Length: 313
Ligand code: SF4
Ligand code: ZN
Ligand code: ZN
Image (cartoon, rainbow, N blue to C red; front, top):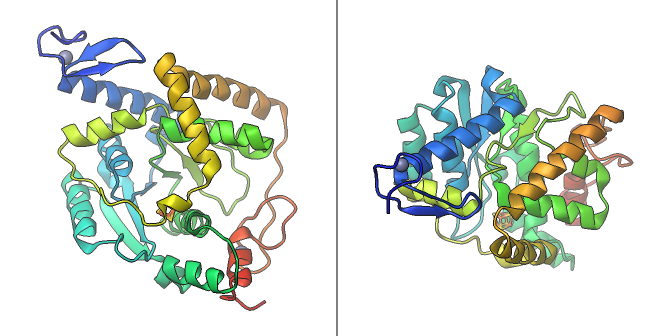
């Protein structure tokens, strides 16, 4: 069967949400065009410097490769964090990541939790466990990663920070925040970033309209050998997310395009809300000085370290 777009090459992929069969080249072009469209709305094409948060997984490699196809790679700086997870953070993977980014002409900065926070993720999990606390590794991981990525963005004077979250992640996050009734966090998810603190570098997600299976196929067609070892803490991931993911996948299989509709419709609501409301600046943590949520004087990260006995206050 021939490709529905170029009509000349053999189709190798069926895109359920459009009903089209595509050849490899037209599939790659389609992904790049859709990322470019989102990147334009997010302001990436006008930015002078963009920090890319990369992990070496398929999403971050797809992020770097698609952005480098229409943005001068000199404007892109990638940033990788070694969490300090025994058996997971491997040096051969780090070398592969460096090579892919070198080939794309993108600079890479690497750091670790150990260097920036003083503890590896394993240390944090062990210490909180010893204190009899039931704090998931992902809570430490996500919180500190966000903090370090923001600090790196500030350090390199980036206009924007781009992460590799895909459509599946984004649709799940929207539904989770809806279920929790977390309107403030929900509204911040829209495609146009909102600046809630002068200490925050605006975060954007250029892959938020690209299905996860598409980022996997893109990385595969581009010959990326991405990290396939699963994080040993994956089973600690919040169960609500796993439930929402299963629910959304069953919806998507019955009605292809559902995830895209959730994100696109949500964007319209979010824009309308932002136009009609005044979002106040976030308060600052009295320990580390980083922005924290409304109503808090100590940020979640510092609170986690105090609870785990790793920070005296
Ligand atoms: Fe971090 Fe959890 Fe992901 Fe592991 S599964 S890398 S601990 S967020
Ligand atoms: Zn084609
Ligand atoms: Zn703090």
